[in-house]
Length: 427
Image (cartoon, rainbow, N blue to C red):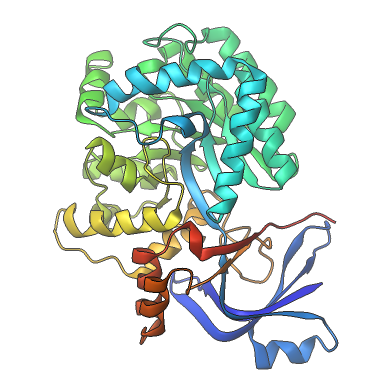
């Protein structure tokens, strides 16, 4: 077993933060040999139960759960920050040309190495990611995540229509490839598979129907896609499915709303859509930097909480503008201030942090597994340095409460504050 002494941040079931200024975190193998949290709490209390255990002292540092990114595109790593008039032109001019290159296994592997390293450098220890329509892209990302022990969920993108040559797949073969990838990778080590239609306009009814049949056949895999992100996209779906009640209901009709189904954006919803999310167990991946960058709109926190469906935060790189969870939490705060039915919502810093850790894990169906430093959770955690920059050091030294400390980090920190990322190891 290993023990670490520092300040410790973790979360209670009611979403509130628990903070020990002088804490002790003890990690060790569970019955399966995976490193998990064995004990956590005030140093003076926990240390009495582990006489003689070697302790790494980290004065001035904060131990925090590894961040969970609910929606990110690894093939879009190299197009982050590309200018566009909106979502659809951005896909046409940048995304699809970039994704064509992933047919080459060597190229996919090189980007996967950089992508996983960048996640870890920014403190992301679990992620739900899009690959491309090429099986080679999925194999490359899973292989790199397995090597680095990252908890990763990904899948081959399904897109058999309204897509250019090089990324468009063939309906029957795409479903055969998906099932083969599920059987090869799902549940191996810390890996999980996600059935991945890009979005309604780029999948035929036959492909969506086949995806739904796979989702029913493999209930423990995830489903991921996009919905109600952009007004032009919504109009396109309305043309394709004029009899559908809403964009979201199209996915329902094909059996793609269920627990472990994650839909990015969920911006332009009404209360019937929100109730459908709640009743089906489907959750939202909130992508504030992407939504601000592409001018798509604002996630309605008030509506989501009033109706009661699950959600968590996501970077959505490359439409999103940073791998850093601090940037994402900061943008979510802006969205809360400006984008609600009742403007002026001020998201609590503890809640913002919860959305990117324990809350995101819970939304993914991984509550109690990752995203927290509770006993039994896998030992993915960060060593944060609240003095990483002169301004951050000056501000955090003046914090009079936990909320002030966390908010200082949300507003002022970036990857420089992540001094170390510790990943749960198998014995």
